[in-house]
Image (cartoon, rainbow, N blue to C red; front, side, top):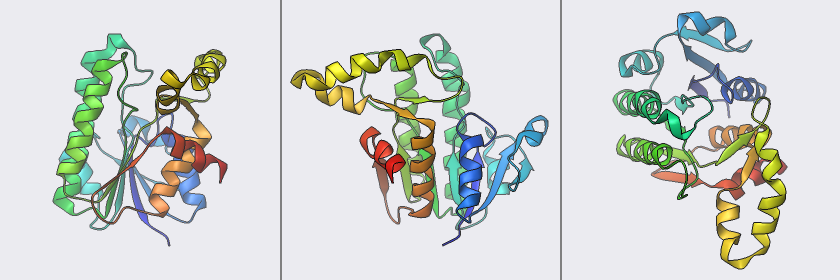
Length: 218
């Protein structure tokens, strides 16, 4: 069934791969982007000028019953970007949650992060708060929890794959290796598209790394 979808962050790393797939699946897609980024909106989607950190701008582009996909975040997260996590990641999900509740979005899709971990604690905390904001919006939601999304420009963790394979063989580290495992951009796009195709109808649905990987195999 075709769905009206508004994507924030649709001109970014994941968004530029996701939007064409949503269009291919027959959805009507709008992308909220700054005026300077409208030229980067994938062909076939409607670009709407606005600020993804503004609840008013998101609400102005969102219609009752729409699916809102919230992808805005700090590029290439690292421990040194804690201030950006608050100013961008947290501010954008707060605006999205407020707009979704105000307009009456049919479904909210939010990309969080796998938890818990001993590293990137500031990032995890901001995403944990983001999850709470999405849940508090009162709208049905799907929250995806990848750890790192491999793809163009994001390939350095491929060197860690042998270590992940070893950790999965050790009982004491197996769960963590699976929960904090790497996913590919193709798997992430498939999982996000599946979330739009089959929206949560009540409460919050959590999609962890193993389920993200499984979506890419279907």
